[in-house]
Length: 157
Length: 123
Image (tube, rainbow over all chains, first blue to last red; front, side, top):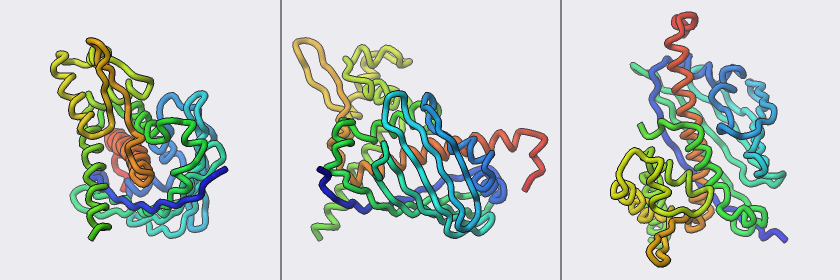
């Protein structure tokens, strides 16, 4: 039996890219471009990736480590201001169980380079008592750490 | 007041975790430990440093709470300890780790675009 719970959490962080806001925005707006960087970690089995980039449009991706849980991502776009802002919501599922629902805001500020600010407000569901998560032992933090590690050997610059 | 303190403590924990993960060698260690427990010399082996250097990284990982060690006889074994994190922290850590990786990918993608003469006069 699942004990129901909701944890609220928000975070935000910034990156500066040596590119114009239009170039950064295009990397989020063009499905072929976004598939290049929004990909699953190395070694994951990939499901289909789809992006219908317009207000009311949807995006979906899935994948998972071999023999591990299947992670599904489904997003809905609420607000798009070219070269400036994208607001969308998304849910994450692991083996069909909804793990979180969040609102994400991507903002771009021009300058010599482009400052990208990403903010998320999320609801993390049934985290304390999910049998699926307990079974995974270390839980998804380690999946996420594995993602970071396998996805980028040069992070921490 | 209690709530403020709680939030501060929580964010301090997260800071330590992210600081611990900000170093490539420590990430190699954590990656190895996600596969299962290992000894200090196992963990030091793939690193371009001496055993004492690796031990310093292991100490920092232990202070962050991400890694836990136990000595049996003469051998100290390390294991990952992420259950110490509260669900909200875990949620943030998991999202942030995913975003860090993807935003690094985005930076690499943008750099390729810039260096590609076919796209260099875009935007």
